[in-house]
Length: 388
Image (cartoon, rainbow, N blue to C red):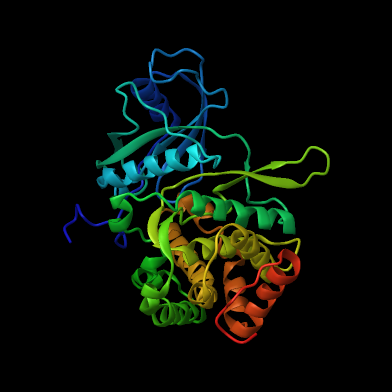
């Protein structure tokens, strides 16, 4: 594969651009004819995202009404920016699900009528010198709310998260774009075996051995059985940074109101979709038992979108695979971009102990807990492929 065709980052490769507020103001003005009056950077692994508030005036004929909540300027990393067809697929996907009633920020056309453009940005100043990166730039309407991270994970909220994810997959059942079938990203669970080359960042032998066990099991039980799993176009990154919630004014509880960031979307196995959000539900649950948190999320999903025996049979491996992926890539990203370490290591704070506990739990006991929640509290019959 040539350098230009490659879609998976190599160890040590710098792909994240340097972007400050002055650069943001310049591009928002020249590309969209909007004047930034305030801006704040949002968290991201490899990209740069800024929430900007703009003045009400514009001569951009493609913007009928300036969004009062502002916009998000998204500067894609230089590796993914080589594949503009994949960015086009994301834009089409967003517009498709938005038309079907899924609340998500819509992309905005620039002054030339395009939904994206390719621009030059400096490399992160602390990582390299005198090197420009070519990056795709997009502007999306800002959807107000707060991210899921840090709010109490009640049973209702968890089932809502699963429900929205199932609705999303239903909305995408009739959507396909050729770029989704050929584009590979290190964050796609189908690429899990590729994290083998990043394990060197895990310095603790017990932890690296745990990751190796998860990898070996995934290869044996999941990778070797792809042809048995249900497939389609996925968001593939429904996590606590990409789910929007709002607080109920009377009781202080939270409801799910939207979903963000289709940057990891892919044509792949549906079990990966639910496994990813279950990983973050388990990790972030402080109100109810983490294992039960996974069960309520799964139940909400299955109320909207069905999975068969072969899919559910490998659910444990897939949930643990996402933990492994996040822990390894977080360690790698922190080593190569220390300035962003707090964000990229967010999973690690509880992730290692949670993964170890989940991995050591017998599959029969784990599936029995999830099956009981689905049957007794939601009336869902599940088939995990083992005798419970």
